Image 1 (tube, rainbow, N blue to C red):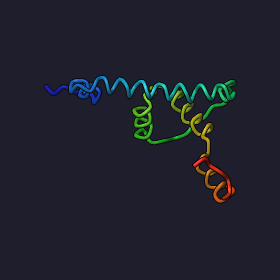
Image 2 (image 1 turned 90 degrees about the vertical axis):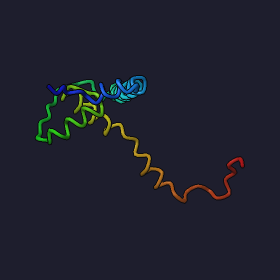
Image 3 (image 1 turned 90 degrees about the horizontal axis):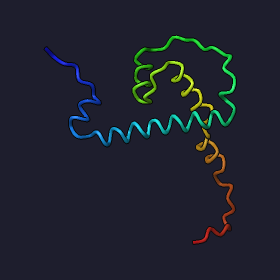
Length: 108
């Protein structure tokens, strides 16, 4: 009889348990950071809206696997919070191009 072995179990058996725990801790820290920032920004205060849509099961499964989130509701909330809190650094950086005074002393 063939036994189904998860990727996580194979990694632990190969001695990667510490690295795997580190990855899980990092993933949890990212989730808590995003959701904490969303809460501080007032984005999570009132839950009066409902969202529905059809998406690929493979997309949901992969997003859950990568984030460690098991609940569909938490996954949607995390994804939306991540987008809402995005800092647009690339666009701001690009817009600032050529606007620094060439005579500015930068200390070197």
